[in-house]
Image (cartoon, rainbow, N blue to C red; front, side):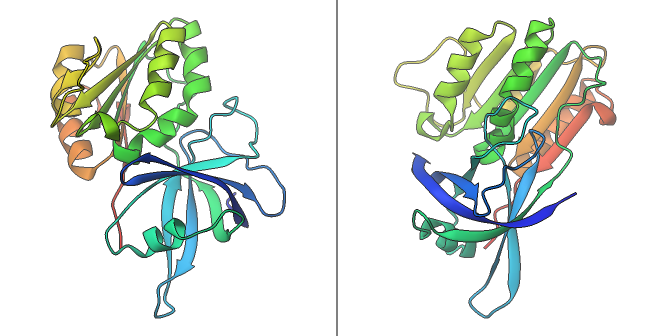
Length: 247
């Protein structure tokens, strides 16, 4: 059941020119129990007093099952955005109102597939970061997991080095940085050029083998959903979460 609480900012760093990584703790000192893939809602008011809220996936890498003390999110800059102003100006020690966790964009214990295809753009990669401990267990069991992460250029591959290091330490997990506008100055073997949905054909998705997760830009999610259905995946094996920027 979702809970309401205050979060206190304990750390903040820029991940990319327009994305901030923010780490919070609950002001009451309690840990947050969540399932990787779930999100929180931040509650605040517009300048005219109207109540509003924004949703952010929890990106904390815990052990995959236990509550965490540190609650990490990635926040995209939106020009003129009310949440951007609130979170961008929040000082260390500042507090905000939140609730959660919510959502079912989570790995399912009863899945019997041989491979997971995880697709993301932008901050849509955040829930997959939280899933890394679960993914480590899956690959130990002989399952395959492939992450296709789309960005315009190298600087926008959020947590890219973490995913690269995880892939090296966990055979069975593959990370493809899909760069749509500008390749790296020093390309890496698993880099791909173009949009994530256009790289799918290389992986030859199949109904017998795969379950797919899609998270990020709605255009990518819709295009990848259509492509995966064309490859024969049933709708129940395509799990989606769209990230929409709001002012």
